[in-house]
Image (cartoon, rainbow over all chains, first blue to last red; front, side, top):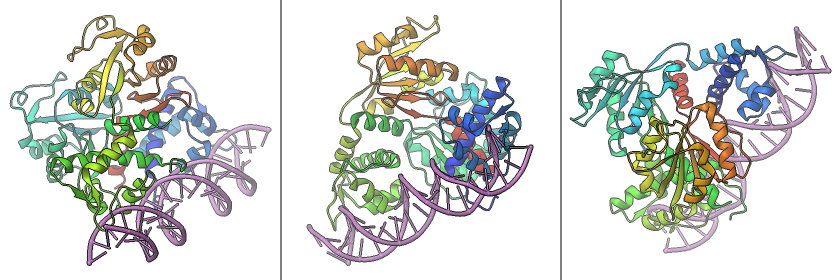
Length: 209
Length: 209
DNA sequence: GCCTGTGAAGACGTTCACAGCA
DNA sequence: TGCTGTGAACGTCTTCACAGGC
């Protein structure tokens, strides 16, 4: 079924299903129907079945889905059945908050290196013990530590330069917190996390309500 | 033209256009074509014209758009021609990083109050001077400070409770950083900022590339 | 000639409705 | 009976292509 093009929205929902299933597993639920899972995740039940259908058949007709099995399968689909090594660039408030964020580690995302341009920071360690290197060493240290995903927490005017350097490593994915549209080759996947856009959405909806 | 239903994606793009136009204005560009703006924002030129068409006619045929005028108009559409008061709940690493975030203030988003449950934090001030109140006082202080948008930076298991309390204020919009699907009445608009979902997207795309 | 504004066409994603099976 | 799996219908968003106007 890998031939069909899978909607990006499907992947995001799988991630949400996975979280819901983890909670269900902790509540010792063994079976869940698409209807119940849909309620928890706030989507249409048919949507869940369609999303899963892209990857195979995971349920039992008349019964539903076995929570642990489905969780395992979804994690495998998403590639979460292993650890992912992250490289942080920009150790400001936000960058530090991310490194300290427990959810990441729980889900198998590990920061293996951190970078900054501030000479006062370079050579020192973050609260978690992670050493801060100068951005000039980015390519070398990323390769040494085997970083696979880059996390950009720099001011917007520095972000594109960092994205370019990541291509030299090369790094396959970038999580971009800088409010800029990065230009990268198609071999590199970028996901933007854009607080301001989200706030603007709220402002618009409140204004025109 | 307000009768037509406007795609959510259009609003998000307007926000991105607005940022691009701000940069153009700073570079002293006076006119921009949909083609050029599209390149900067990484979208189709027709998309930009369609997005704007929902709200009126802003360009000059054969010429393009006047940067400052269009910027002004888009900001007005989004409701960014005024200040917005934010209430922060959860003063962990992430919450503190947000309060300190300069982009917010620049765009007219101001934190007017902060809350936590930790008795060690309550009564103290954040680095910006913002006093931390106990969550029990949320409704009262939000009303006093006129907070319009709530920002949830609590652990996921506390997020729904906070969302409920926000309804009592009432608050019209929530920016939710907790990895949970909040249940709220239709009068309250929620925007989720979900790092883990984004990382999972990267993991998936890298894995199945 | 050039670029916007926009109806029409096309692509895409979601929901329906029911067949298939425990 | 109950719930999954799925083709078909539907609705939405994006892109095309060209008319309209500077």
